Image (cartoon, rainbow, N blue to C red):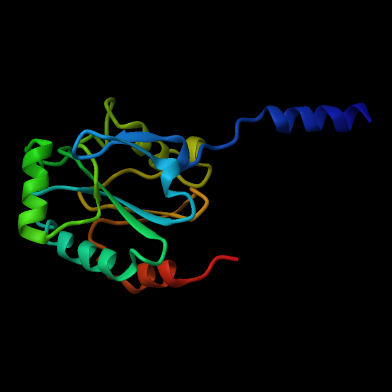
Length: 178
């Protein structure tokens, strides 16, 4: 009996991995976004840049969003300047670029760091198994994609060159969860 109580105490004292819903961040207009507001939605979190060879992915991200936004799906883009100074602009400049050139209407966040000592806490969670409970990863380049399920759990990381319209992403969005 004491043994069972000790096992129960051990497991109850182990910290549970956080979910994406435990975080807040500033959007591109400086407003605080509580990620718990995304409960029940599948999320794609992607780090973006305006002066990258992969920047045209904005167009496909918008197509994906237009197609699935009414099906409990959201894209959350974090501009980051971690790779070869490819996102040097201010939040206002980034917003103007995305709206003017790609008609972006999905959620754009304030510019952050996705690597290094000043890494944003959301990216620390995305890239650390000890925090997300699923996997370790490293942000390789701009437009790396992280898929989050309706319960706020990390499901998968997709490399930067993966098209936002890749069949794997479409199947993941459209599969029902039971």
